[in-house]
Image (cartoon, rainbow over all chains, first blue to last red; front, side, top):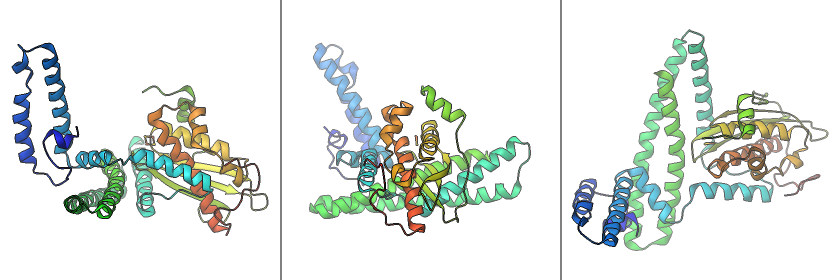
Length: 202
Length: 140
Ligand code: FES
């Protein structure tokens, strides 16, 4: 049973989270262990299992990123496995692997990390470089903006995915899937950058 | 998490951290990232144009201990090898050498990608075809 099925939902990404919450509470009451206290052991065990599945399903689906990751997983997309396979193909062909993330983002990520390190070292040495700090503040704003933008783009792909589910258009489904994988990958860098820059500026 | 002794050793005394001149024709630069965790790694090689032997290698990694150890080890391994030989280094050898657990495999993959990317960059700069048949010793 998929997490979507737990809630009787189709495998779509646009989700009314308020309605999800309501169903969650309703189903939680239904499977509450107290209601099974006087029931045979198997029934109790089954109810416990259901309620833990329900909890996992709810926690996953209410979070937009985890929901997307979960859907991709149920669609057979293994982010890490794909990456390892791509490396193996590159080795067999004697080529370099195509990076899934645009090179300029990698470049920026690397540069920012260098600056962060500099700031940390300056701090450890007891002096604070105001210009560096200013640059980093700007970088933080920039990457936070990009992170939000990537979320918006992801939401746009949800619409495409949901529409393709309705029409049963497999080509469109695959296209949306690929886009979502690319966006999630990009996001993981942005998320780290925002986190690190934030920590360094504390 | 418990790291193996070799990982700890490379992590505490990383070999070959640093930078080579990116603009030099003899230097190849590979900048790669692991989308699983958002970590980034830069590995550079300096190649002798006559012999195609990698004479120097440097790295800089922003990532977990396993990624740092993998790239440190990778720079040690490529030094003294020909470009063709270096291309045959695989992440499974790195995993073995460092005794990395399954969750850390992607960190070693990153190091292999970095070697390959650095060599690719060097080849591009020097007009060597990407899939040029290996000169010697490459076991694909
Ligand atoms: S956890 Fe990211 S490279 Fe190791």
